[in-house]
Length: 126
Image 1: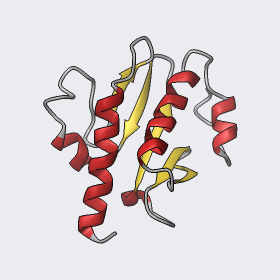
Image 2: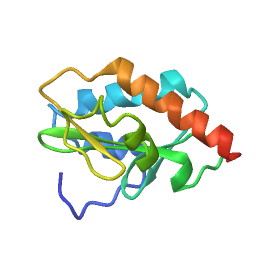
Image 3: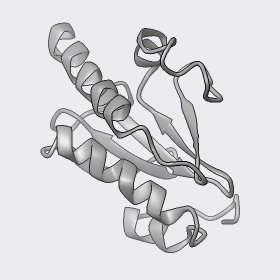
């Protein structure tokens, strides 16, 4: 995928993904929607975003992104911090984690991370 490509829809984003990356992205999407079937799918920061509350802004979304060797999962810094021990074997950023496209995604962990994100939003009244 070219870095200067701008996507107006999630479908356009999927279409631009390498064939080895797309299945992992679609798995991540399915995991998010399994926990949050009401999530609104959109493009934010030029990658797929899932608003966990109606009309949710960035701090109310989970984002995902595809790369040649991994998929990025962006639930929030608080979620990454909360699950730090379980994520210790993965490359991480302040609010993100990278999952290799060569390995199975940790479904249970991802589902728990999405649930935790939703619970935090609920407690924060967002």
